[in-house]
Every structure is written in structure tokens, then in C-alpha cells.
Image (cartoon, rainbow, N blue to C red; front, side, top):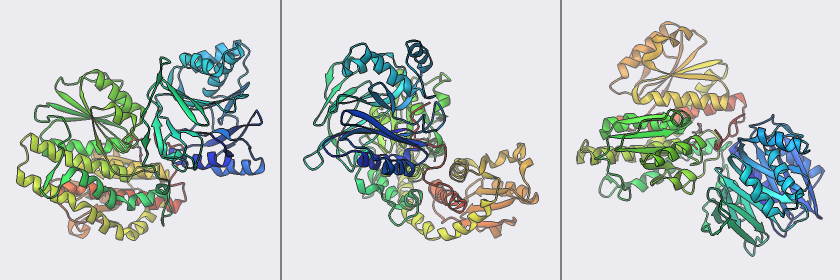
Length: 609
Ligand code: F6R
């Protein structure tokens, strides 16, 4: 998703803006640009592609100035060309923007008939012209911005510079998150950015704009207004987005680092929800009576949705509560019938995913008790929910979610035990057994990571594949889905997941000796059934990669290779299976030489529909 940064201070800003943009790279982008005000004039540099291209432009043609804005663009309207890259300028107005202006066509026609020339295919250009038209009509920048905001429909964050005003920057937020950074004696100035992470090298004193807010920044002040124009205060918090956290350490990619962090972050997350001394889960601060609920609806996107699917199996079996799971982009438009006595749970790493956020708003409107599992505690989803269960995964920089997923599973597993106890489905003894199995997870994952070279070797079997099939049954079906998603997003190999029992209803037609089939099959009550499906694949020459805690040889089936899982309680198997499917995708992508941390076309946080 697009990233925005703005600095207004006393030192040259171009290099610092570039540095901040690098910290927003993880969001995904395909072009970038920076503009500054220098000697009363607006100047900009833009480049298609990665930030190195912009860096080169800046070194060939440096930008002066102590006030400036920068942008990484993830194309929505118009190709990722230099011409469409932000900032966009109209007259003396310069704009960067994240989000979508839904009524841009109407505004474009109106502005064009007023004589404003459009030189890009973007929706953003209408914002620059709208504000410029207000300035041309004699309004000051503040009034011009306010009047323009009233004309815009959609979700956005934007930052604006005004030629002739070298101590002024205006930012606005509707839908997309926006953080304001307050400088110090060491680093004077004011900062604005898509997240606190971008601003971490400059300041940790952060305030967040609320929905509809806009802010007028000078070198040493921030005056915030709400949607109605009333001046408001937003609390300044101390951000934890420490500059050091974006280091890859000894790893080649953030994704590798994040895969390896899982034992530690799962431990941290577990210690938040487990009272080990008393061998029980601890949700004492959660004000939801699960005993009286008749339904839980879980909504999320992508990997977080697969975490929700695992939770359905967990909560229905061990918690005794019926669960619906929906992809957020479907849920929001299908006018779902919600139980009068239901609760709605939202799962999101970023806490900003537009579709999930819209479902939260819908459920709040329908008087559901709302609960969210998020990794970013200051996020919009966290702030809009009645209750929040944090995942303590730390910042996830790799676009493909790994540690956030297993931390989501960790919280959901602990929540399952809590629900099971409240509903009287689990005895105290069962709680103790499940808690003990959960606290084993970090150690078991560490053991698996020691063996990663084997998965690296096996991944060579996927490198030349055009298509890969993933199979799983029951609670492991979502892990097959997650494995296929990971593979396609970072290696660009087409992968599909099927519930193993569905194989014979169609996809078996695809099987031949060129088709690798990854089967996620830890020992459980459905094991033998999945093995029968494996036989069907083997009989047709399919190349099976077998992920299991059982020895492939004992199954009598012809497997090409085995990835061994440690044997644990069946309850924790989904957490363990996550590791090999992540590593298999990771090493395949590494061998193929793709951009593992920033795969093409993808955005880390999807703040548009
Ligand atoms: C896949 C991936 C995405 C996200 C999805 C939801 O690796 O990262 O599928 O899981 O975009 O994002 P959040 O969790 O931020 O709502």
C-alpha cells in the first residue's frame, strides 16, 4: 500500500525522507517520489521501480530544502510510471496520497472543464487541482484544504505542501492511518507518516489522527482539527517502533528472520495469555461471556482468514461454540444475518485492512460484541473494537505473513481453551493438558528450524513446477491453503489447495508426474483417509511431498520426500505445520531469485478495497 512521509524542520530533508521511505518499503510499492520547498520553490524527483532508482535520481539531481514530502506508490489508478508517481503538483500545491478517491471521475471532469490540465492517470491529481482551484479563488491554504476535503469521497491519507509557505504542511486522514511525530531538541521539527515505523529514526513521540482529522504542521507545532473543523487534542504516546527493529540481523531476508523469530514471539504471546503457575489460560480482562453466546463470527482476509478457519475447528471441537468464518470482502456485501446473541471476532496483523475494518463497522452497527486479534495495537481495528487481544509478534516487515500468523493461531488456541472452560466443554484436567501442549510449541518449532536445510533441499522439487497442489483434511486444510498462498505470493508459482476429500471431485484430473502435491497430514483421526487420497495421487504419478509426524514408509505409499514434524498433542499440530509450509515457500522463492520480502504487485497492508 502507498506510504507517506513528511518532514518540516531545520535540517535538509531529502535524505531523511528517503530513509523514511525505505522504512515504508515493506508496505509494497512500484514507484516513489519526493518533493521539497527550497528557496520558495517546489521541486520534485520521482522514479519508477524501487527506491534505488529514486536514490540515483536524487544523487544526480539533489533536492535542497528543510521541508518536504515523500511517497511510495502502489498503483491503483494508472500504471506504475514516473509520470503517475507522487507527489503531484498543481500550481503551487503539491500532494502525496494513500487510498482511493472514489468520485475522482466526476471531479476530474469538473476540474478539466474549469481549465485544469490533467497530465496523469491517477485519482490523486484531482486533489492537487481541487486545492489549487481553491487557492486560485483567493482562499488561504487552510481554507483551501478544508473546502477540498469536503468534496472528496473515499478513504485516504494525504500530505500537502504550498509554494510560498515554507513553514506549513497540512495532512488529513479519512480511513487510512496517519501518525504525527513530535521532534525534540536533538531532532527538531515535526513529522508525519503512514505509520510510527517510518518516523522511528526521528522521534518516538507519536499522536495518531482520528478518522476525519486534519492537521496543520509548522516546524514546532501541530494543530489538529476534527472533521467538523473544531480544534482537538490527540494524545501523544511513546511509540515502540524502535529503529533497530527493522534490521534483518544475520538473515538474508526479513521473511527468514521472521520465520526464525517464531519461537520467541509465540512464547511472548503465550505468556500474555497463560498463567503457567496455575496451569490455566488467563483472559481475565476480557469482558465477554462466552457461555451465553450462541454464535461467534470470525472475519479476516488472506492469511489471517486461514487463522480464522483453523479457529473454527478448534473452537467448535474444544470450545463447544458454533463458529462462522468469512472472508471480509464477501462478508461486508452479503448482508449477513447476525445472531442477537452473537459476538464478532476480527483477525488482522496490520489492523488496517479496509475490508476487515468495514466488517467491524457493520458488526458494531448491528450491536454485536466486537473483539479483535491484532498485531498493531494502535490500529483502527483495535481502536474500533469492544475488546482487543494483541498478538505480540513485533513488527512484521516481510510482505508474506509468517510470525503474525502463528501468533494469531497462538491467541486463538488460548482463546479456545478459555471458551471451552467457560462453556463447560473442557474439564480442568483437559485445560491443564492443552496448556501444557501449547507451551511446548516454541521449543518444538526451534527444533524444526534446526532442520531447515532439509526443506531447502526439498524445495528444489518445486522450482521447476508450473503448478503445485496442496492437500489437507480437517484442521489441516487451512494449513494447505496457507501453504499454497505463501508459495504463490513469493515464488509466483501457481498453487492451489484442496480439502483432500475433494480431490476426486475434480482436481485429480490435474495429477501427472509433473505435478508436485504437498500433503499436510499430521497423525489424527483423519490420517488414514488422507493417506488413501495420497494413494490416489501416487497411482497417477503425482510427486508427493509429505508433511507429517508419521514416517512416510509406514504408510505403504510412494512418496517422493518427507518433511518430518515433531510429535505433539494433536491440538497444537496446526502451529507446527505452519513452519514447513512457510519454509518450503521461502526456499523455493530464494532458489527462483524472486523479491521475497516485497513480492510483485503485493502490499503489506491493504487499505483500499
Ligand atoms: C499473506 C498476507 C495477506 C494478509 C492479508 C490480511 O501472506 O500477508 O494475505 O494476511 O492481507 O492482512 P491483515 O492481517 O493485516 O489484515
